[in-house]
Image (cartoon, rainbow, N blue to C red; front, side, top):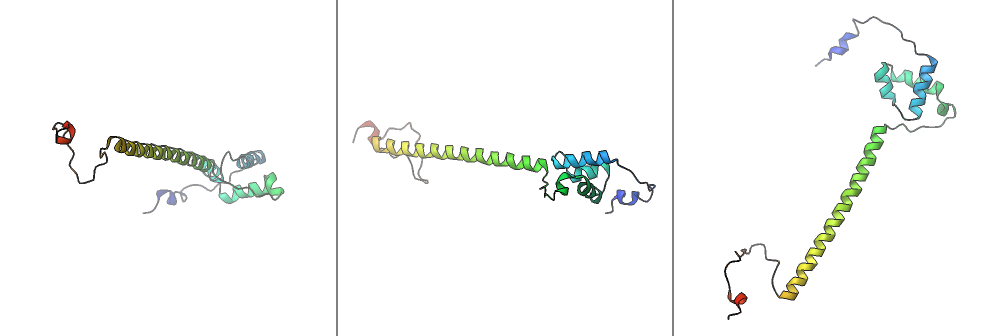
Length: 141
């Protein structure tokens, strides 16, 4: 299905916009400080990516020194850090739960050995209601 905006350009008059050098320099500084991204500038000011990269080439101190800048969206970096923190937290929780399970298993083993009772029942066995007395519990043979 065709996008309506695709056909809108036919009805709009052609005009050339001019951005001052100070504006371009300010936007390049924002890019260098990772305050905004190339895509943000393109969308906000309706400028082509080619134009923005020309500004970078012309006004960037890093480009003149031939220093490569790794451009990464700030939100991506924050998301990655947040996910790494979440992973650490979940690993910590899993470790605590594992220790708790091992502690409970050891306590069950000690209780079984001390009281000579089978606490861990087999999967298919019936659970007792706890109200009937058997010969073992009453001391009668």
